[in-house]
Image (cartoon, rainbow, N blue to C red; front, side, top):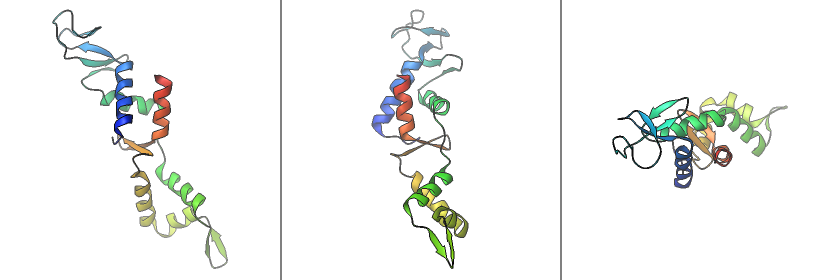
Length: 144
């Protein structure tokens, strides 16, 4: 997952907000900075109804998948071409530019999709799917 430092900090803070400290040694949810049973401060994160694991990346991925919709990258790129490029004219026929590129040169079309998704300020990849960064920002605001 590629994210800006600011967005990563917000997502990590949200992951801590929606999870609880979990002491694996005592196998229980713990409030505070130390486990009252074993005095450990090495906590896992517990997400109610899901389970426990070390770190917050798994929580962030789950939140994004549950609260945001993945982007259909090819459809998004075709729409982008249609909005920004002129109609393609071949002989006396006119075609939508996204449709034309997708069907005439599928390799160039897929390269364009990859270039569009490479803009990590607009799209963020999570577990092989792409999400709009603005949708993730909105999720953070809603859940915080």
